[in-house]
Image 1 (tube, one colour):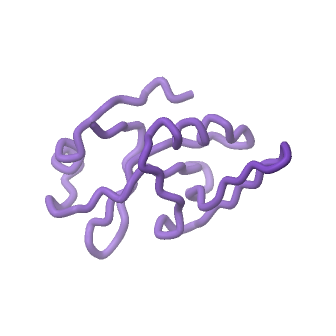
Image 2 (cartoon, one colour):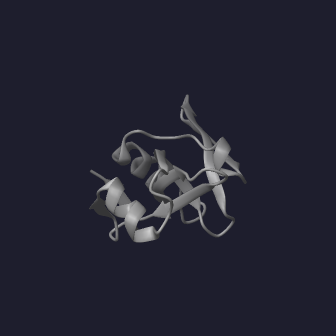
Length: 102
């Protein structure tokens, strides 16, 4: 599912995407592209999983570890999901998928 993932430098992502140079990398996020929702809560307790999704990226759970985000994305089997980098670009958020920062 995630074989297009590649390692990239944050500064290279900012330059390649043309977002403002002062954009702040917030962390990794799990995103469902079909419904444009971001993972807000993932809990596993007593063999049960709970997934809560948000329509706005400001409510997303931010991962500091790419592989943990990828693990949760891979564990969600109801719909395709992807891991990407979430940036604060000033007046809005910007999500860039299929990348792992170095």
